[in-house]
Length: 622
Ligand code: BES
Ligand code: ZN
Image 1: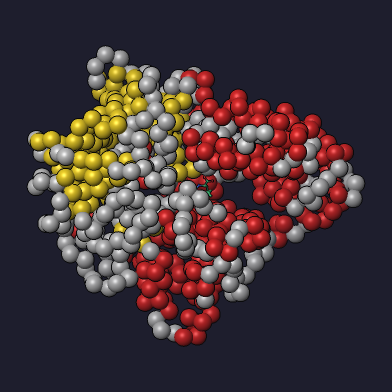
Image 2: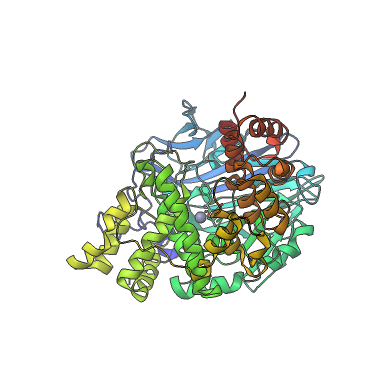
């Protein structure tokens, strides 16, 4: 087993093998597939290290300061091309001298190339500031936080970090980083890196500085920052929770299983290579469920159900410490290598902690999502490896996540769990801190598992899974006995029986979701009132369940739940919840459209720029 240590990958050794299936090996200039989402030309010159010295200006909603980049370049390289989006460049220096630079044409969603002349020195310093509307950053007003203090967080994936960091923003180009961040003295900064100054250090009148270091080379979308009134609670020796003080206890309760999750993942896939694993619970406008920023997963507060029933989210983000952060999709068209693998590992962690039946229920819910995607998504959108013009922001999760995970579960069933486990462990070792493509993964899998066995090759249908639309015929629908009785309860309710006949109190969250998700699309108002009253669905604390209910209510134009819909859309801004509700409202004629337009006018400003952009396309003017 060939294991490239961090030390080896940090120095410039040539690629250890010329095998065409190996991308981005330890050679810092190893060839990369073309990334249509980046302006960088990594075959000429690459950023290897980013050093940030930035001040967070909450009044102007900008970062200003400088980024110093260490570069590796071909001997004949005359320039390096970075990504930038809305950055205001003040000066660029190479060594001690001013360096010539140009900002090229902006292309939609990708920003502009920032091209800097290279005259010898392999270190460049860029003095700049971000724009107040940088899409990676959300500057929150005190009223938007639990502490009633200002808050800032970043979201890099997929191509947003170029709005606050001038670097090559392509997932195949790995960079180490360090940072010094100056913030108002009543706030604390955290980053996806080792914290060097837990209490900060003085940095002039009313300000404190926090320093960080990320010694492992990471794709630049994983550089992340949070600034706010943050407290910390340890939950295990290597794990803990950062959140605003009034949230941190609830957070620590919800995350109690984190250390065990790490142990399970390490036993399966090898050592956790990042030091600590902490989570940061963000204010409710965080646009995603979670984001796997290394050493510091970012989480939505909407997973705080009070009963640990939504912690598969944490298992998912932790799993990215292997699939995604250690072995990384070289281009966004191969997102399934990050998300599909991670969803599979999430399931394995859940199975180890909560049992096989729990895992089967999660698989069954995902299977239903896949079936829905097969009827709603175009054939091109049903491929794991995206073809054609792909928007790095678009992502049918049922395909990338659930079809991807189903692929690995199919492989598991055919080759055996032990064989897949030991293969995956060796895969993470072989390609640690390297980019990966679908092609390279399939070649590696064939080399180590299929080994020319034609019968096995035929049974696996690897190419069909990776490159074709739909679900190949060797997939097996998951069977969850915990769902067996649910159709009967749905039928009894639809026939007019009391909702309380269902054993709701004994059901777990996934069973409740199954019950709601399998209700007929049209229900009379009287049935909806009965359902809501039986389980207090308008106000139920579990946000996944409340979302499923509100989708039913909206799709039936059930106006008594209008206020609950407004509350739901006002109190959190998670895209996965917010977008489908607005979409359903806009499909509902005058009632829904009026509600959506009026409400959105009021709450748009609270949503994250990424979510605003999505909802802007849904809630169109009358
Ligand atoms: N890496 C993703 C979040 C992401 C995906 C950000 C694409 C930007 C573009 C993260 O790991 C994720 O998948 N989050 C999910 C939760 C998960 C349990 C499916 C989410 O946010 O809902
Ligand atoms: Zn993920």
